[in-house]
Length: 627
Image (cartoon, rainbow, N blue to C red):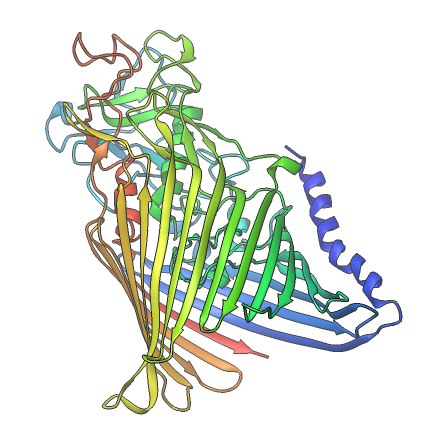
């Protein structure tokens, strides 16, 4: 890994790159126009049973400087977007999200009877156990406690204070924010306060074609649908900002990218043709799932990761583990997450994409190909760990000990939109096939397997008049159905329950947006709903946007979730890695699971981001002043 000083120099060189290129295009040219827009914004969210969950104050400045054409170069401009924020929730509600969060906990121990618990650190101790001096019973929560009871399953303690207050479970280089980085996420070694910074220019060819280039820190948007990403996977996403509910434009993480379009214009057959090359040469960056202790931790994954890393580094108590019923004290280096293997920068670790798109009458289409790193983490078992009974260090089959990795993925797909004049409706279709993605799989000794995946979205947009509500302005109705199919799916019934891949083999999520306008478009209410069919979970967000003046805008809303939360699935307590000590009976094969399950940790994949947010209903108020 590069040292911090090297990383900062590398990033600063990228910042300077956009400016360094300008003299090439300027020569005798001079600036024609400079445009600057800015806003300040306060977002205040109140969550059910929690209170304040966000008090984010943002300053964002957008600037663009255009230059006169020079020779074959035209449309030359330099654009930048800079964002700084301070979220006061970590100071105003520090008992839930700040330096005072957490408490001493007890873990369920059904060996002593239903509902029985033992304090953390007082479970059944293995011969090689842990020292509570290194992992004290303070500043923690029980994994998943805000969603469900342990109910006979696995659970363990998760530290939730900022990493400079409590470093336990903070995974180096991945999820390890201190209090200042939580308050102001843009102030980090990736210089995220530079939201975008790029230079645009066109090079005019003699045949009338144009090579249009954008170089710098930017968002590159593929696909024709919103909310769910099928082709739109070039930039990672910051889900810690507001789960899946913010506009993608606000939560995509810009990367240093070269985007070049070869614009061929109209041909004998097509109204327009374009070939686009994407080279993401930035250092790899995964999706931000949220660090445990933040208000938004999508599918609660960050809490699972932090608790598991704490188990690996310091040991800890796990509920209902030994024999499937006894709270058990494990020592360091026996179970948990060892480390996150973030790819170093190298030419082979950069990401390359190609898109061919065109327009034929009312039909627009694209064909897309991308080679990239998965922005979602994969837990890979098969690492060396200590046997809690003998002390021997080796690779044990089906042991719940992992590294976090980000596999290489190949994507092939396409999109299409069609405007039907007869019914005044736009139809959208988008599909992608990926190979190389990895999924948890308790049937495999490494506890993961690779699978091809098919994803698609079918959507439609239509303006509809509803005279009794507004006889002067149509309402926008926008609906879509997102589907996912895991093509190399593995799951089977074992003695005590289902085992294999916890995700659904096939699943669909439908969304519907209804938006209206009044008062010369200054008042705009909307309702957005999303329903996960297999998880049986629904989210409904209602909001009203009021443009008070040309400078001031107020948005108020409410976000509800309904349906089933976490579901039970094989948790690998019955996987038998350390035979004969972990065998349920003499015939129990080494590394073989019996399917004994609980809510944690794999039930989250059956619930999805909506099902795992059942206790996150919120009132949301945003005030923005532009100048």
